[in-house]
Length: 473
Image (cartoon, rainbow, N blue to C red; front, top):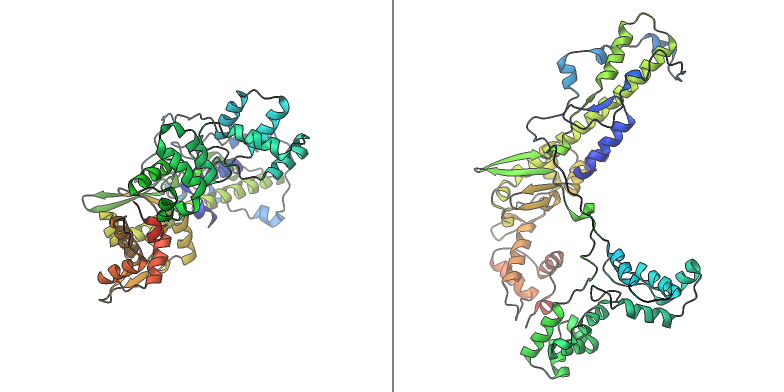
């Protein structure tokens, strides 16, 4: 189960750990076997080291090593996983390494250009260190003051800290070191005040009517500022061009969350779907020939003292562990391909067309019955694996949904209903957005038996706001 949950991006590291711990396990000739030392001399007869063993005398006398010294190709094949249908990873490819300056390093560089005494510089460093990755300073002044006292032995008042915050707020990118969204946007507008009356009016909107603006109560803003629809639209355009997360796109290091390595690939070959497993999931693992040779040498030998028997028991244990790990990797591979094959067959029309409205209602139980696996196993696969198609990359969980009945009694996927709901909202007149009641009526006209509260729930799941907040001028 643990191996099943390991993402493709991390599987190579997990295999490397096993290779380092077990010298009886190695990768094939096409793989990277830099992790294994040659084990042939580990139990050389010249080594006088005593081996501890819990084995009984009977265990030494009744050693059956036939399965470990068999030279047949069949035996080797049982523990060799490479499927020739899977493409080999590109070899010899040089992957460029991107060197980046982190967000906080960039701020510290700007701080170094300021003419500050040593005390002020340390306080400013503490402030910069308290800025989060989005560019906000969300720590209270009292907390920063306490940190300075305990860590730097500097007693600084809130007024002194606030004065340095104002200086840091002049750094790039604009909006940095703000305490909240309102201050962040105001800081950015202050740098644009020379650009026209719309910027000045936008400043007034944020400073005096921020709540009304966020709730789109535009009539109150117009009455307060005495502006018409055209002027209000110009003001809003000034605000929506601002960056609500000034630190969010700076110095992003390559984190696992920033990209996805697909576990599966589905290709449409002239109407026939072809499924392949990412080759990283099918490593060429096998038992070390050196360890098998040691077993053969022991079998052929006539002098078998206690030390040799203890050594061969140790080797046997390592080979058993290697076989177990190979079997687990193979079982993981079979579970993944079996699950994805069942999903692909079940949702074949979607993989051919990319049309979400063709998705059928499908729950974990449906796939578990097709594969013969437990629902808990299928859940682990669905929640942690991705498939790349010609229409995009999807988490397997995407293809699962409950059913909803139509007027004709047909069961349709809730995913289909959500897609139609999303399309209705996307096509609506933004000057007069559709209410949940109107959306419910339109879905019912299309034959979907759905209640208004269900429409509201689906809209929220799609991260779509209520009609009033979708309104545009």
